[in-house]
Image (cartoon, rainbow, N blue to C red; front, side, top):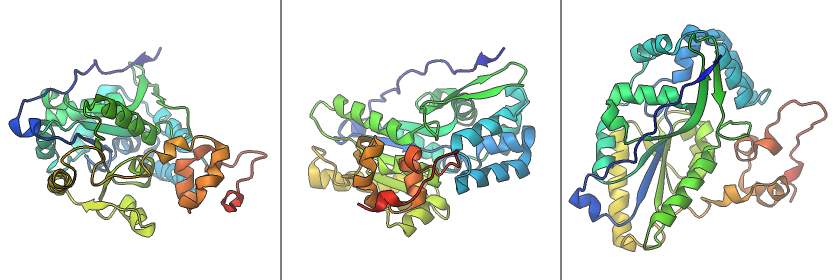
Length: 323
């Protein structure tokens, strides 16, 4: 019978009491994708290629997501379901294959020293991500990182790998909703009523919903998220390593202090940040759809209305754009 592999409760990030951090008025929260962002490879792909459906089938399934033939969640369940390997054996190949961004650990130390919460937000499986971070960073340092991801049931013999999705959507984990929730909580925690600066770091088009909820977006240079931002004039900052991100955050923080004194709305405020969560019903789609001009983007923002899944009796068109 499958068992729930859920990591133990992680205590809240420790405050180191750094004087510089205590003088920092504007609260900053960093969210980051995991696969392809913190680590160069995709943890799931490493497992699927070595212990599951294999690279050829995985690439075919990835194409089905891109064309809209099947949903991300549906394809992911097939990929995870193809695994037949105990957790420990599967982790061995990940430990040998995965490469961490060369400047991530120093960036994370910067976040700790400046009381900047750093949260991983991923469509992957939390038990895997926690184990990878514990191994590459050490358990003490990794304990400072909150992981917002899907849980999993993994049988002891490895014959069953089943995601436990965070949200009942075609994506399984609505990253935009998770960031919106964190923004609201952080705002409530700011005693002076100031609005926290939300930073998101990613690499792929699947990060777009979360990117829409951020004030500052970092996209790994040369990958799909950057290409998409360029194609659709979405403000972003490219990065090669996390050292680039650290320098830019320091610059943004200094600029915000000069312009706002760390109070009220951030200097780099995204006025659309919470729009997408308010647009929660299909009836509201036509009113705002002109702000999301492409099918690809619509699929991520309104998966139920624009998923283009080939379901019987369902025909998706661009009629909604006629507003």
